[in-house]
Image (cartoon, rainbow, N blue to C red; front, side, top):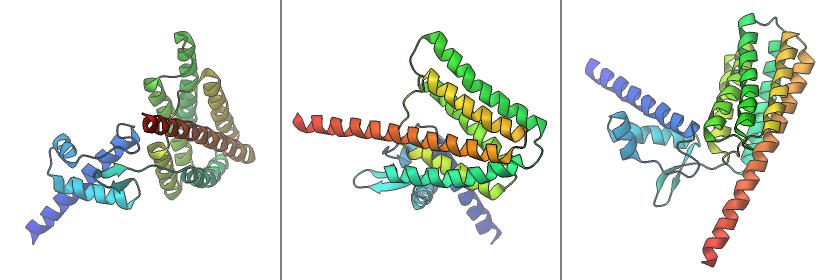
Length: 249
């Protein structure tokens, strides 16, 4: 019996390892929307059998992160335009409440310093872009931007001291990153606007101005949703044009 229990625990641990590994690859953009998942390749990467990989894929499919495609097996799911709207609406409802709660209590100095550092990092990206003379961030710079942006919002949620809300918000943001169409690189003007909006939220929390904090985060999320929808529409038009051209050949 003890041997069976240890075996089940090991299988469960391997499945969790595989699950988190696949999720990280998707969240990082290494496995994008529509990308087929190779059980064999993942098994070689992790040095484990295909059984826990297969179980992890089933779990991700049940959560809507993967979907089964004819002749391709498991592929990374695609969001529709309405999916993006609904996810942002959920995120706004939860983050506005959480930020309001965070603003009702005196903030820890260490949290404020970390928020200022993350916010200033976005401005530093703006300056870096200006020095290069390019019109928008490249892929590596966009990856750094996403880390700063996510770090800011995750810390704001942690300051609300509500683990359930933080977990749901993090899952929601993960879905948006996973499934939404690829972002075009941010411009200097957009980086300045995001920096300003983040700064407003941080300042309102520091001053314990609950209403201003809630209003600022709400406006920020609505602007972000419009940007993601614009990106979705852009890539949707590009894909449709490509399909049209391919049919003409």
